[in-house]
Image 1: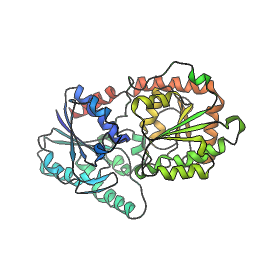
Image 2 (image 1 turned 180 degrees about the vertical axis):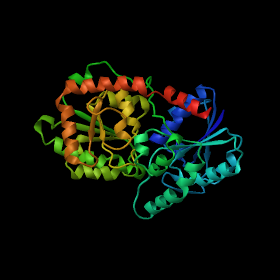
Image 3 (image 1 turned 45 degrees about the horizontal axis):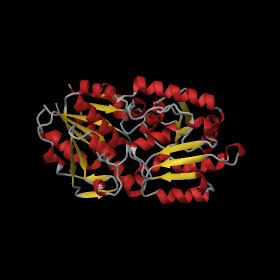
Image 4 (image 1 turned 60 degrees about the vertical axis):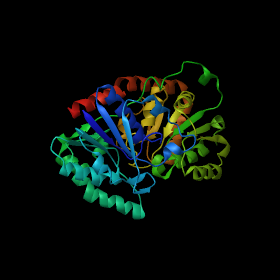
Length: 385
């Protein structure tokens, strides 16, 4: 089949949506499909030190068409020329939210023959305040219903998330139209080390992995920095450090919070980390912490990566995210934005190494059983056919 994947961001930009489309496309290609990705050209390929190793590995697997935006703002771009590019595809798979592509895709579906099927993958709600929030609201009430009705199938990583999302009313009307397809992780890339370096180090290590730009404001790093300030007050954990993996325009903002919270010397920001080095950070930490604050977080691919490296995880009790693992089995859930609860849950992990290691082993077993890209690709293959 000829399949068009339409997504707002794509590698070398580091982000969960683009990364998932990359792996989905690579797997579908291996299953015999002809895949073309349409994405805005933000100029990321020209930025210094941006990792393009993923694209090199996938060369020849699929085609990437980067379209020049007529208008762009952050990770949003208006690409009306997409309408003319969507010819002779069997499947158009739109990854929502991508407001700058919605009209082109909807018109193409409206004017095309019935052989072309539209599939909508609902990644997450978009939330904001002010003018930006008003724009999101307009798309929610006018454009999203049209897309949902036009789609042959709506895929999602979590039905739990959908039941609490902007699509919840439509889900109640048309539940049979939805298909849950969880994301995956590359188990050959994210592996568990079996050395004794963790046992021999004296300081505790927390890890945060996520974008530090405005598009990822919801990841909860500010709360984590304040939690670290409370944790190191305990003499037993005074030498605890936090490694922050990510880059973006809020970096200096988070540096200031770290300084104001008195943890400047305990926090290390790492902006340029390739995939092989990222595996080191996962393996040599006590736990990954993803304390997202609202439903803009719908899944959390970094949770799978950490579990694949046999690390326990701490994340927010949010729809979609809470279904990735079983609380107290592979990790711990924390109330979103609750500083005291976050401190408590981190302390539980740091205090009981044996229990933390058991959670880590259970996490690896879970991803091997449930979260592989081949499993995702095969489910999509069935839906396409």
